[in-house]
View: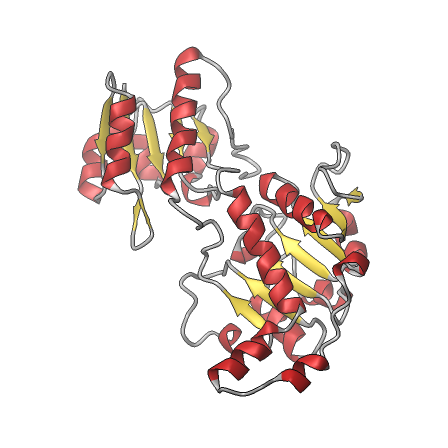
Length: 325
């Protein structure tokens, strides 16, 4: 079968040539095409049975008359779901969970940095200033008497919850299907209708939910007002989950104590964005999944799924195209 791999979003999200060769070596009976340009995609898609990509237009999808399965090397699937794909019987899968450990550790690091106001120490170090008095004034209750709310309890959120519980925190969760069994370490789970209530109980709020119409700008003015004044927000999911203007107001007005952000509405974050200069806000450039070779586990997952596809077995990480995750 023809497998077209078209993952080319420089400078970071471009699959290396060595990993294309790894797929070819693992699947010698298949025609594995590396299509990086628009012209190469146009030529390769019509005969593809499997497409690996991070984005596809409706026009490109309609040209792929033989495609049965589309896979993305990312977790987010918004770029793969034009209406033509959603309406079709074509299966879509993603790379959910392949980098959950790295992302969860990054979330914990951002939470601890914001709670301990390490930005103050960083600024002091840059200016060769001893900020002991400033940091002595910071109120940061021990983790054993603190509460974390994890919004979204998939692979990443469950791992965040496990780490937080291991550090002694009380962990609450919000997820769409609240009646499912609780992940390890989570004391209480509720549906999205109780988000505001749970926000008021948390010292740290970590967003790990997918971006859907229901979660778009789920953290706005009302939600920030519901948070504790000493609480911090961590977003390792999608930037669209947060109303960035509301976040700016919340930090400047002292409604929350700070934030750790790894995802933004527009990326790269514009040089003129006010988020850069907010006090006690840590910004990382959508890098939570990094911690080694990003592509090894991503390609491993895809190759496992090729085996399942050949055997007619259910694929890992099937995407609900209507709910977009």
